[in-house]
Each structure stands twice: as structure tokens, then as C-alpha cells.
Image (spheres, rainbow, N blue to C red):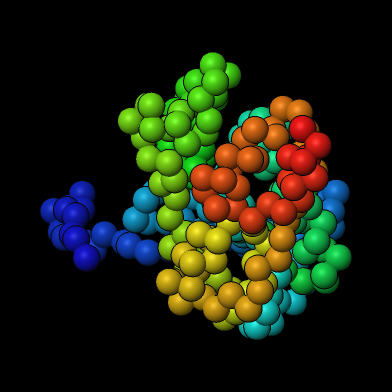
Length: 219
């Protein structure tokens, strides 16, 4: 742990890790959640977990949702992120208990908002989402899920049913000590604007998207 000099010249430890800061009721159109706010001292990001019901410790239904301003807030059809967030919140309420961890700092698979928009501009010119990131000299996926695992630890969750089509999320949680009892598909019907993007996620990023088969066979 590094140290910093305080205003009076005394050394004080610099905080590291993930700290729970606040727990506030959050009524939503889906149901009444608890918004549990965290500060990631290592990265400086503010994070939030939306908790519904009494979680218990085992086989908790969860979603690790990467921040996506264009999809979550603006309803972009370039991706399926907004629809996935909506479906995950509805699923947690239907289950009676669960967590949606909203991961800030994950915009554009970790490259940031402006870089994501530049990548989207390249995709409009014919590159796929992987090629666009690489053309910008950026990683294809720079996301880290360590903070999500620490949040689940803090909530007392030991094993999860993970709502995701991305096998890398499962691997990351397991590597960080969270048992994944089941990976629950979160399949959103494709549209004309995102079918190429979704195919790329399946073919180049190994996402499990079997519902695209019918679309591919009829195209």
C-alpha cells in the first residue's frame, strides 16, 4: 500500500480496494431496488449494484452490465445493451431476488465513450467491431471484472447464476473466486441495425448467440 503526505505533513495510507459508501432505496418502473454504491479506490470509478429482495449466498441471479451510454440511455440499436439491461432487471424482479451490477468504466468494452464513437464511425464505413478497435490501436476488450467480484463478496454472494452470453465474464468471475453455478442466456431479438454487430460478437468474440441461426439462414 502506497502512502501520501497529508496537509499537516503526516503520512497517511492511500486507500485501495472497493469500499461500500452508501445504500439507498431506489424505486423503479421494474420494482423497488436497493442501490448500493461503491468506490473503487484503485481505479477511481464509482460503481453501483442494484439489489432486489433477500439475496442469500448461493445461486443468486445476477447480471454484470457494462456501462453503455448510447444503448442504456439513448436507446441505440447499434447494440443490444439497453434491451439486455431492461431484460435483466425484469428477470431479477421475476425471480424475487438478485443483483444487477452496473459497471462504469466499461464503455465500449473498456475503451471509453469517445473511442467507442470513433469505432462506430469506422463500423459505418464497413469495419466490424473488432477491426474498428484494432484500427484505432485499441484493445478489442479491455474490461476487468475484479471490482464486480469484490462487490459480490461484499454482498455475501458466493455462487451465482450469471445472465450473460459472454463466456469471458464467467471465466473472469471464476478466476476472481466467485462460483458460477449456471450461465443464463440473455438473448435479445436482433434488428436490421445490429445484426452484423451481433454476428461479429458470436463469430469473433465467442458469444453464445444461437438465436441468430434463424436470421443467418434466412439472409
